[in-house]
Image (tube, rainbow, N blue to C red; front, side, top):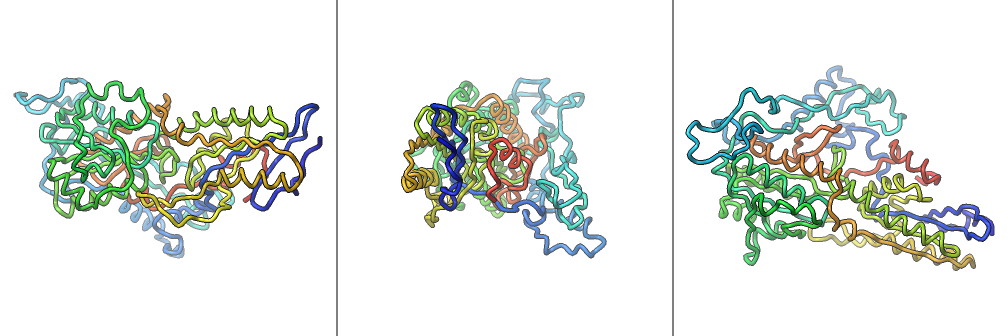
Length: 493
């Protein structure tokens, strides 16, 4: 049996067969996601952000400094003193040299240790981009101007501050998890609760089942403490439950006021963060002394500007089981074909990284958008995609049937198995630090922010800058080129 011809492949369906060995029929392993690849999505930095390249006059000799000033303005994170300029900070109650939480009869005021150098200065910054590209033709180049001029772009460093703007005994903090499940949700919840208690907060509650928990009278808030969350990270899912959609922003803020909540920690993706930003703005409009802080939860790793989001490493690791199963099935069957569909929506990062990690993949498809859009959206406003995995499975069978070649197609979709598992060690660490820094940001007086990693450092970013559009795989990036090198497939783009 010889190698099957590439000419037999129908348009849009990439197939690759290796020459068969004796007594071993040719096999095919396909890996795909339901999402898509962004063509040239980040070749020009200015085009991928809110300021387009056409809005920059590069003939102006002062364009660089103007761009930097605009960048600093956009990435300036909101602070409680923007609304309450007379707010007076107090010494931080977070000091690892004094682990006992604040008590009401503390005679000397709030404990502070000026000799402890564990605080972050408000002027500390992290460099957003670290590679100097000499040309647009460099792989993965992100340039602002035609000459790829180096422009420093700095963002706020995350961590505990020496001065805080909330008295712990006056804080009622709430945590809400929205959207779908993701490995690590319980880890983040746990660390937020633990860090709040170290600051001295006694009132901590969980809002059940996402934003709808603010309006559904049958859903009571869940009291949280270290005792409650101590071992919750050992299980997948969310202690608080999740859901999509919910009441209006106005109704949510009304509920926050009624409950006396003045710190809100929101765990979710782009849609959830858009809601958090709207809540933050409504609180400012009403002049409420409120801190709204997001923790980006997306297993797809599609949040702008961040190295990665929690749950992603676990997803890539868990996907290996499905890939290996498909590989074994394909190799064990006569004319076997293994197809694995991984989640990723429009991004494709899980498929790309899982393919590279596996070494068993012949073809990685991200996205091969061959199916018609449904024009439907879910409760979070996300477009509902057709099932690309089932489509490829059907087209593969159809193709080989028309060619008169028997084929045994094995299709695996491990989506819900991956989403429901507990976080691995790498994600566990990431979740822990994200949860801690979310609390540090709230006590520092910041609101309308999210916490993430940029160039391995933890940072605070204004929510609007990370939700303008999803982060997509760049087909000119080195990582995609590495994936192609590993699979041996041609570049279909």
